[in-house]
Structure formats: structure tokens, C-alpha cells
Image 1: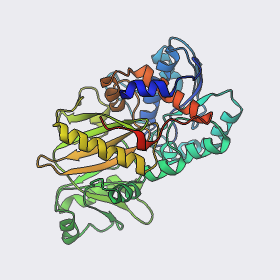
Image 2: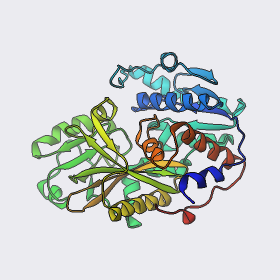
Image 3: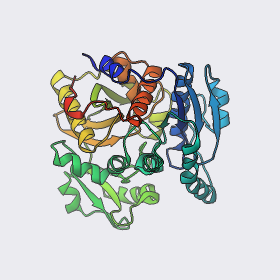
Image 4: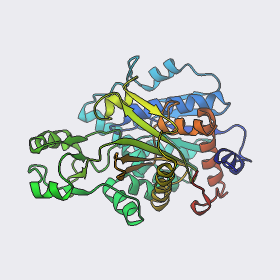
Length: 383
């Protein structure tokens, strides 16, 4: 049986209409992306007949909807700023950033008294993806979609995640820790990574926040400046060998890998602007790669997702060079969830439209909350 019908059978028996708390916004550097994901997913669920409460635990903004949704009005109520072509990042004061962070846990505790069937968190990055939110929901006994606290934390920390998946045979790029960002890596250290260029990135940020490609020795100061706000207190920043070639991603749904998506920036590096500006990148699904490579990447994605203990949905990103070098970059436990995001694109390729995808995920979380199993990774199949 195909993946789509298997998932539909697994969630059979869930109520036709669910009371869903849709978490969005939050306190992280990916807040604006979270707002876009949450509004898109929540509106799709509402239009399928579910009662959806949009809730931003960082600002206490809330909207209760069912049925057709005016997305423009909803975006204004929830604080999403965007132009006609791109998402617009927020610039908040340090004091407001602290207030938002301190609100997160008390706000989440309110969900324990709400008549919620399931929580669907689309809080990208920060507390949402690091395990804090799922940990609080677990303690409250509130059913939720997605990976638990330990798996979320392990996947969010790129250093830990790379160590785990490499141990289980998933190829990763040569990498090291840049512990003292006041001093550039030495030529010998760079040579051990395979030479220039290298990629410098924070351990626990997404959406290419804080990332720099260092192409020569004079670029280290810029990398320290860009990554400076995200330096880990003992490990600094992560430095990886840059793998030229294709950028490919494998969505995970349940325990199964979806068709590959190729990401083709119109020019340059696939950074925040090229991710979230209309027309700046092209996406091809299924990716135009040979069947053997597609199967290998799907298997690597399945293993990475399983060994980190992830569940329900996610996305595993890869670089593949022209000569066949494969490197897994990261595992995202809360990937973008607008109708044109990469995971929904891949789901659509197997016959699952965006609204149904969101609904399937919520029913997975509801059934788990009722103690109903959804199969195991060992029974999944690479397609």
C-alpha cells in the first residue's frame, strides 16, 4: 500500500472535527517564518471544518476560527509583517525579546485548562524546536504533533545530531568546532576539512540564520560578526567542509521518506532572502536525480530521522556534489509548513494536498494522546 493510504488508515477513527491549538510566532529568530507557517496551516485546518485556536505564547496574541478565513486580516491580528514578495524580519528591542522569552512557559501552561484535542506547534527554532515546548506539553499531559523533547533537542543541536547520524552510517561533511571566534582557524585546521571554502554556522539556529561561507582566510572576521550573536559558550560555532553541487531535501511523514525536492537558488547561496523571497529560488519535485541516488538519500533520511528519535513529520537536508559526494546537513523537526514549503510540496507529489497533510498530522497527535500506536520505524518502507 502507498504511503498516503497507509497514513489515512492509521489515523482512521479520529474525530471528524478536532479542537486544535495552533502555536505560532514565539521568541526565536525564525518568528516571522513561524507566523507564516502557522497562519497557512491553521487556515487550511479551519477550512476543513476543524476549530482552530491560533496562539502565540510569546505575545499572547490569539484568534479562534472555524470555516473560511481571511488570511490578510488574520496576519494583521497575529503580527505577521510581509511585503507582496517577501517575509519581513522583526526588529525588537532587547527588553521586548526578554519579555517574549519569559512569557513562553506560563503561556503554554494555559493550554492545560483549554478544551484542546491536540496541539500543533509550528514554533520554528528556539523554544519550539529545541524541545522546551514539547517537554512542557508532555508534562501537562496535552497531546501534540511532532517529536518529543529529547529528540527535538538532539536534532536541533547540529553538533550532536551530526555525531549521532554519522555513527549510524549517514554521511556528513568533515566538520570541527570554532571555539575561539576571536581567532580564525589555522590553515592546517582548514586543510583537515578539505580546504576552502568552508561553511560557518550556529549550532542551534535554522533558516540559515547566522551562517557564512568562508572562501578565503580574510573572510573569518565576517563569519565571526555574522555568527557572533549565536556563539555557543563552550563550542563556539560549527565549521563544515562546503560541498558544492545540488541542494536536496527529503521530507519525512510518519516514518516514511517522501520524494526528493531539489532547491535551485536563482543565484548565490540559499540564504534567508532566497528562501523567503518570491521567485528567488526554484523547487523541483521529484528531483531530477537517478533512482539509485534518490533511494540512497531516502534511506539516509529514514535512518537519521529514526536514530534521532523523531516522529510525525520533518525534513532532512543534503548536499550532493557532481562527483557523488553526499553530506547530510541537518534534520528539521518543525519544517516550514506553508502550502508552498518543501515538505508540503513533497507530500503533494504522492497525492496529499496541504489541508489534508495538516489534518493527518493533527490526527496522528490525537491518536498518540489516546495511547494508540502509529506503527514503528522498522515497518516503514523507502519509496
